[in-house]
Length: 460
Image (cartoon, rainbow, N blue to C red; front, side):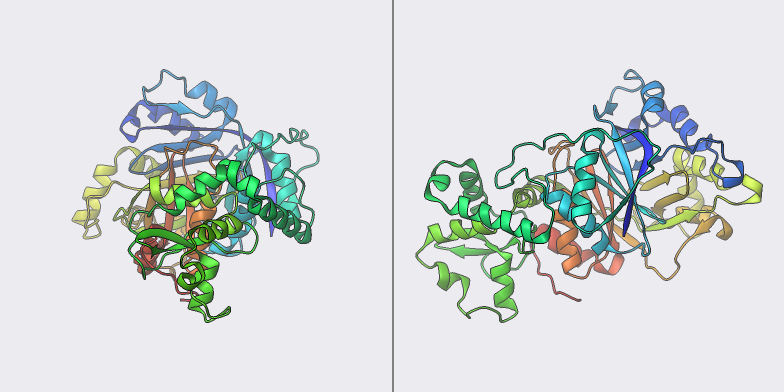
């Protein structure tokens, strides 16, 4: 797998979808006035532009200089622009619907404490990171076996900046799997030391988390999967009851019991009458991102819009550079009610009242779109690249506005349990939401896994 650094310097912004009209001329400029065709492209490659419209917000990644000029702060009252400059990395993609690739990318960055945005498209995947973290991202992904590519003629990337202090994470370069495991074992020893347990804030934090019941969890005997373990792949998951108090059991213990591994003793036997033993195991198994998984499950409002979606590519090599689908994009953006009415009259309209979902991402090489299936009826067959063998997608939307833009581990906390359950997904990050797309027939199972109220069956 190759990860390539794109030349674009990007800004991230959001505004309420009710204020789309106020920003319409700017959006038209960034979408319509691009040279899409290779034969009609200007000398300079077109900068990346990504637009996502969901029920909560409109979120945009665009050229930093253009955004600063085109989106003045007085343009609309609800406009928010991140103070960071972002860089985009492109992931070679030989399988559009492959969640294991997402985990391969985001897991080492979650362990390194790097906050990221992730964008699945028809042709490729995109990773957005703060510009002053590029050196750290390159070092981290390279150390985990990914081939990193960049243009040597480009300006040198900014120096690495120290990552924030994080409990249980040491700021040493990880050059091999063996060294990583050694560091993790050392952190376990530190956490097990009595003085650490007495004084370290993470002890109190995890103890509080261990007594909390995630939304949707059930009493003893119900199953649920959650976040990752930082080294061995275990996690903190199942809710059980001990002396009348609901607690979260480390997933590796629970999995061993499910699959008949280990000494045969049950968790309740191992910790009966020993409440401190539970906390010690929690600390031993917790990774720096385990707390993130708890927070996402407890604090991120989760909704399941009724949209039936598809991911498609747009053909940019039509009629000597002319792109007839551009007018249809404009119609979708600003005349959606008419699109919906026409689809209903033709018998293809939606059977629900959910707001449209629309994602449009254009790079110098390709254009991708994710939207409702009935909207795709606007396009001619030759205008789209679409895998007809895939089934429609359903959306699980997480409201992350409480977490801010620097929270790390969120994407991994979502992608890993779904991947382990054999559920492929696409992921779209916006300014304040996570948009998880799964096959229609896997929606219920995926929702149970992410809520913690259901079990996963590996390989299902």
